[in-house]
Image (cartoon, rainbow, N blue to C red; front, side, top):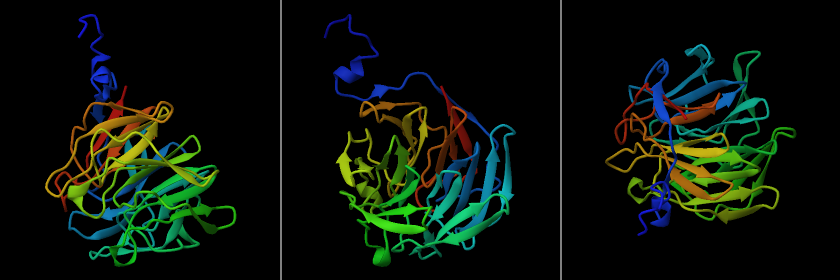
Amino acid sequence: MDSRVSPVLLPFLLGLPLLAGDGRWSTAAPLPEPIQELSAAVLRGKIYVAGGIDRTGRPTGVAFRFDPAANRWERIADLPAPRHHMPLAVVGDTLYAVGGLAEQSFVPESSLWLYREDRNRWEARAPLPAARGASGAGAVNGELVVVGGWGAGRQLIRATAIYDPATDRWREGAPIPTPRDHLTAVGAAGLVYAIGGRPRNPDRNYDVIEAYDPASDRWSTRSPMPSRRGGLAAALLDGAIHVVGGETRGSVFANHEVYDPATDRWTTAPALPVARHGLGAAAVGGRLYVIGGGPRAGFSQTDAVDVFAR
């Protein structure tokens, strides 16, 4: 190969993922308690987490809010019932907690709760058309889009559920091409990206990325992730989707890979300081916050909060 080729371009020419350039990890105030199988979302510049599995191995209904400016967590009203593997998403100016799994036997639920900041309480809205947990949720064009997960009998769910807050009603969208659970989802530029996951088997993780367009009710396949991962998390930072963590049956991932929706290309970024699965991820103020999760495969918890910035 020509010695004049830039080392930055060499991975691309060899068909490898590009490095994402500079960036470093630091730490923020830890979660008030170690939790795994939680989710995170940003509302009015603050990060919310709710539910999960606590240090005793039991489902929890606790919810916390993090103020990045003060580097401080505070406890808010508990969920109406314990949940884990439950996505959070913000539509407009409202935080939603969607479905999830209940009990230690992982029972799928159809509940939809929104958080009332003014009253510090959760309120019920129209339930999902079918119970599901370990799913992904993203917000686009003022609507909530729920994809993947499993339902009754631990059967993978193909149906795409779309919620309109203005009418408090659900409708069904085109089915996801690759049904899977333990995926993550992110809304970006009018599309919802369903990322990774698995077919109920941690040793059969997917690298699949599929994008749903509510306007046309169509799915499209995008460039696969550089690694196969389920039990992962993702957040949109400066127009790019940062995907972190995950697990197999016997190991956890520190992988941090970045997808650019505009170019349909992946890059590799500095790995997580603490490898884990069942974690939360949220971006605010030009920083990516990676919250809690399990530092070992299966049941384990951490209170770590790692922060990535370029």
